[in-house]
Image (tube, rainbow, N blue to C red; front, side, top):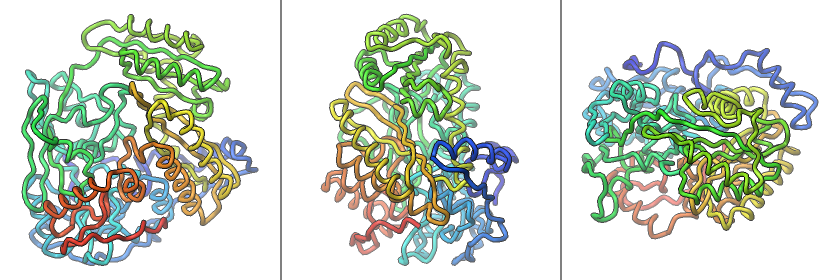
Length: 558
């Protein structure tokens, strides 16, 4: 496997789980977690398991050999293939933990430029191989899994990690031309040398890539205004099987449907994003944070809606319900907690915070001094409840690794709906999840937080934790996930606000989108990818080379 070109150290990432291999909790740490978790789930105890020994992995021999002309940029060894078999949703973690890598790609390619991408694409087209773009591998919707049908002679994972440079910075326009394979930390380091920042921080920031953010319409840390990566894209370049798709750099345009928006969220179904011009900004120097508690969830929701409609545009406006605040050790009092923050590179934000707190108090909010109160300056984000939440937010994916080792069923799902629907929507979705957990697991916990808010609606993010039954955890998870997804569509939400569609959400996405738009997507697929090799099964139904749409049912959950 080619060495990573400077963006990741010799420290090894986990093949089966989230993050660094050496960050997986020790057996003793996981035993302590088991003792804390079991009572929450009404259990006497939880058994601690260990990941499968690599020697016992279930992974077949590659079905195709790396051609000589690609040997310098491709690999087919077991470890490299296993590391590209899955993303990072619960089902992925369980299968990887057990050493089940039957769907691993046959070859993994590491292009260093557009021509390398084209060469791999040409080979796949000629040999009938599926080509799956792979950024950081953090997909939670099966977006990078080579789960393809018998039409294909094999599959190739296209890892873009060598496309990891900030190529050009336009300080006048505040934009930068950036290669798609750069991961979050390396991107910010390179931009920092020019005194600017993209300031897009999804939870996967440490291990995800710019191209992945664009391809999946990723949400960042801003709770208002610049909530999605869409807001930062100035232009982009995508290599497709029929040629290069490149858009013009413009601050805005009214010239027809947006070509950029066609690519943003395309999930590798039409081609491979290789670079983009991104809008950047000066790093903020003025900050203010506050932690507000509410004894009841309903007035807390009303306060957040008032803030979203006030025009104040807080950078952070995350509401944690009582269960969420307790799970992440932000509060143990049974209160709902609102984490507020404002920031600017130009002016003090104290007046904005003062007005925001006045709105919160109008709705019964209490500014808790014992939770950090109101803070200003660079240390604010590390203080009090906000600091505790930030740590929990970044550590949550590692916690999932440990929960899998305990046999616990745990996952998250997120959505968005308008304010007028939220009360009914929230009650119905949580009831559906609780009913499913009771039916298949005997009980469980569901919590909610707001990740992003808008004048017309909110993006609630749910977490569920339930007892697992040894050997049946994936089936239990799938029943809960399906119940949640059905309820989201039934009660007027979107199947995803920022996690993408992938293979996992495909059945519900087809229920959500206009049927005519589905036909337009399929036509675009046939035009840009006539052999149907690009990430088949993602975003749109498989489109074989003969142009007939394969109406296959959702794939097996196991």
